[in-house]
Length: 184
Image 1 (cartoon, one colour):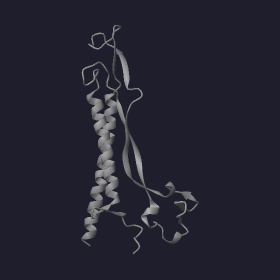
Image 2 (cartoon, helix red, strand yellow):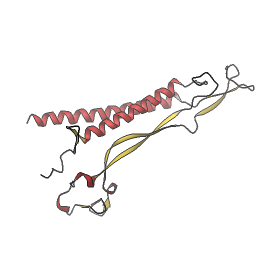
Image 3 (cartoon, helix red, strand yellow):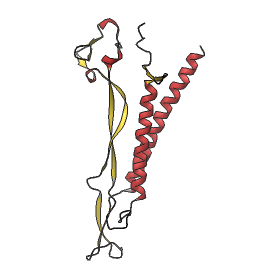
């Protein structure tokens, strides 16, 4: 039986059926949660000049890098366009989807979500300020502090929080649509 082009992609996992949109929204929520946790750590360590063991060493600001997860559309067993219509053609040899003027879309790959690629230390993670009264100041009165701008971090926190909420709203709306469809 052929699947409808508008039907959500389903995958089997442990006997339960999962819809890809929930995987995408869930992966977005997880990634944004990691970003919010990293930002919270940066804000909490805004004045940290010592390592956890008590030795001298400044906290280095951390940033998060995301990466898109792609799934191979050839492994799905069907194309979103029927019979290679004039509007769109799917080439199974190359995996390219051609629309009208031979414009390829992601080389046959479909977005499957997002994941945290890495949490890395910022290149400009330290700033030096003159504060001779600071206990960790050097003999000239300068001290190394984390290069954490609380205003920038709060903007990042709001952005991550809104992206998290957008993903949660998508999942909730899809759930509501599915429930409505079941009641028809």
